[in-house]
Image 1 (tube, rainbow, N blue to C red):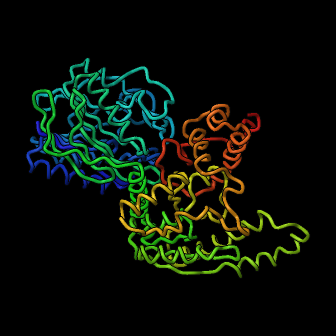
Image 2: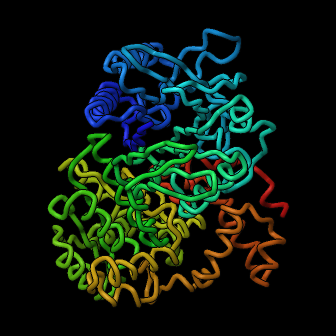
Image 3: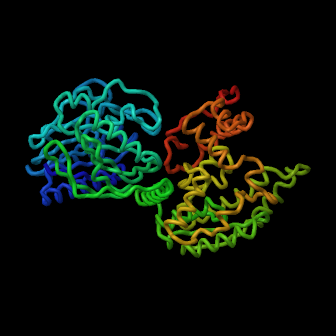
Length: 555
């Protein structure tokens, strides 16, 4: 049997566009002599549709789309794609997350998802009922076991939240499946490609069956999907692996209980390249799928974070659509302007200088009676950041630019960001990238991507500083970022305890102080712009912690 595995970038809610994309692929597959074509999970409506699933007209349109896709097929090609369908067979939630099998102008089979994740960014049990029937589908005389995303990820996720008592692939093997197909919408994390392959290899060798895996690619709001669609034979051999963050397809031949392909596996990418490509994809898709603007604006401070965002923006939107603004104050170093100007020239982006001194001085003068007799402090520091935020938002409003937030995960974690100041923005590009990772990506860009010094060396080597008071350095109040990020990874992503963090760094006082900073700044993060997710635990709707709580004070 000739099989085509499609790596597809749907837009949530664009049922018409997604449907036509699927039909175009089916029609091409038929011309190419393909007998079975696979598309990702919920590819008709895009993943995750969230509460759109509660709208009756949304479900009605997906039903119409299913019929339209089915009608586009003839007897030569079978297509499997994902869509929500109504629950008409059992009590419970109103929908199933389904794999639709179409052929010869009609729906031949509908397979329901068994394992419904409710952790991190997932909330599928909110909408969908669980499958309880395991029966392979006969396609061209071959017994195909169809699974949907988590059905194969059972008990092998990056962070173990809970374990499942059932293994759908095992049940399908017992029912006679000769090959396992998995249509998926599995979000990207930095470690996911290795974990994904290991998971598929474990299943293939355990089941002694080949597995075909079709994964969604692209970004929908915060969540990024890397694709990485592939096949694994029963001996664990990986074949037909597709490039990360790129649409496409690979053809396979299933014969004599194994898969073969002429397509070479896509080359592996390192951590820094994955982060960069993920963030470029995230920003590009955010702009294209929201239609918010083709132009972006950001503050260029001469620091490492805004430098990386400028590079990402130039790559995602095109240099001519990027507007960078440097806004020096009385405390800004000379390099904050000159280094920014060099970077902007190297990237070919628009560059303006708008000093904030007069704006800041007017605030200080206005507040002088209220601040009389009080020392310079955080309030005065934050006025500088807020002055810049006002300017950037004014440019965004006046010209319709999308304002990009440049804060990193380390700063967001400990609250080194100013509400209504440098936290302003329509999208937070680096909010899930630690400071040490920002440096690593920038060095990789110069060394490997550009192969020349595009980000000035001065930006890479200057001590990090917010430049909100004379001679200010981040290390005045924070540990070295290598230590800080070690603490943050343990606490945020590994959910380590105070005792575990203290043992790791050898300093309980510092561990306690940083953990409290993380918890006490939850209120700021609730007001932050949506941020692109690249880790197993990002700030945003996948991390749900209370603001009003006393747990932090007690540990």
